[in-house]
Image 1: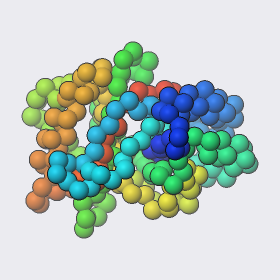
Image 2: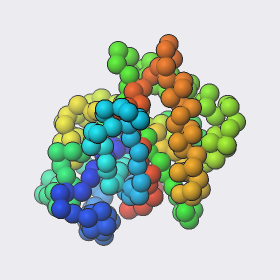
Image 3: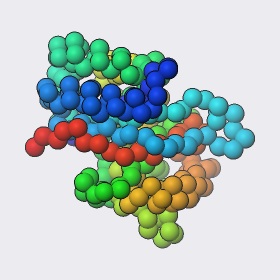
Length: 248
């Protein structure tokens, strides 16, 4: 399974609520009317976020995002066929320009690694935290992925409240081969992030209380010989998932 992930924000002059309304009630139905070869389409509607470090100059960088799109595909052939289809180019793409600030979009093609199966998506109140992770300079992608997983497992092994609050965890790891397809979202061809972690919590209070502690523990393990990511250029989005459609 392949996942195309795009973090997008609203066009200038548009409110967050107007953006989400168009995304869910106009754009979503357009996609559902002709799913092409998409297996699953999820919109993650952002209600809070965090980024940067205290006294870190990169804090001023514009990381804010209003939603994260997830498109699930069986394989690369299905992805390419969907993105080159006339319906995508003539209907879906032009509608995206009505709400998406195209130049700021961040998109990457990934393969999911499910380290803790998430709860059923229909559970009321569930929150998904999306941690966009920027690889530390000088690392190979395989080294980054191995250290990322090991550091996460060490955080959970501490058995602290922030570990026990976690209800699901998936690492979406960057793949190459779809750089030109990322232009559909307005993204540049080269992905700016090497991975996205999806962390599931029972409620907004649980997420906002426990994820910052989880992230601090992860940062402590990303130093010296075990370093794998750049916290100052990574960012976090707190969201609620809306499944537009899912095909068997």
